[in-house]
Amino acid sequence: MDSLSIYIHIPFCEQKCPYCDFYSISNKNEYDNYVENLKRLIEHYSRIYHRKICTIYFGGGTPSVLKARRLADILCTIKSNFDVVDDAEITVEVNPCSSDDLDFDMLKKAGFNRVSIGLQSRDENELRLLGRRHTADEAKDTVLRARKAGFDNISLDLMICVPTQTKSSLTKSIEFCKDCNVNHISAYILKFEENTPFFKIKNSFELFDDDSQAEMYLHVVNELAKHGYKQYEISNFCKDGFEGKHNLRYWRDQEYLGLGPSAHSFVDNKRFYYSRNIEDFYCNIVIEDGVGGDAEEYIMLSLRLKEGLNLETLCSRYNFTLSKNLLYRINKLKSEGLVDFESSVVSLTKRGFLVSNTIINYLLDAL
Ligand code: SF4
Image (cartoon, rainbow, N blue to C red):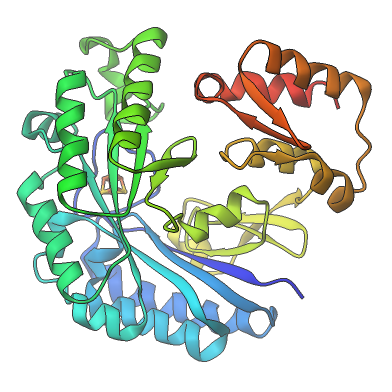
């Protein structure tokens, strides 16, 4: 039977960042209750799914607000109830603000082996504009403390197209990451999501239009490449061998169990999720979201990856027949320099990544 991944959503933040649309609340009094409910549901699911666990990811929200003791407790519950493989990748997201007294030694000892730190920018003005409360120095200190505790797999998050950001400030942020000697960087374009405070004041910013967004994005791709970070997904870059295994499983359409309000799951070919409501999660009220793992989904997800869409795998895994129209469209995109197409593998070029959604929809329309 195929292995499974586990995603644990920690829905707490000390303070809400004005651009963020992830589900999180600010309520310290709820931490212990949340951990107990989470542990109860981990035990519940371990009685249903008897699969080897190959990756575990603690995301949020801000997992580090729970501190090492609670995070270790949750991980210990997973390990004692599920069959976690010896070399499982186990990641915890850490916010530099809540990491002052985070005991990295305890996290390492508990079995965490990867840390993802929300830097966003090294530029203090950009950080303030984003409503982040940490400084670049604090982020660097977090990297150093994690490394000292034995973590050699560390990722930093960067934000692209922050209002007031320039290519030069972006270059400095990238150099900062390189100087921190981390082996993984995620770089996302800032989106103004509805229902966020940023969305309401959107027009007060000087926004990046499509062309300048593309320019900033390509600048990031090129600068990171100069420093040896190869792109393996639209927004993810790493040194050789340090791809994030957990997220790779999402993009390869492999199965995972997500626990926590707003967490999504794909298990036994079914998709389901928890609403953005902590009480619904405590009552284990899941919302069915249909079947998953079909050809359409595989095409959509695998094209996000540099390794691309393998047409032979598509046909054998999903009993799929390639149509003339699909092949015609792939060759057309190739002639326009938007995809590479060799040995049955279709992958987006740098230019293609800029218009990935349009390309994916164009190919899906041919099914
Ligand atoms: S710390 Fe992260 S999850 Fe929390 S509000 Fe800010 S961006 Fe969102």
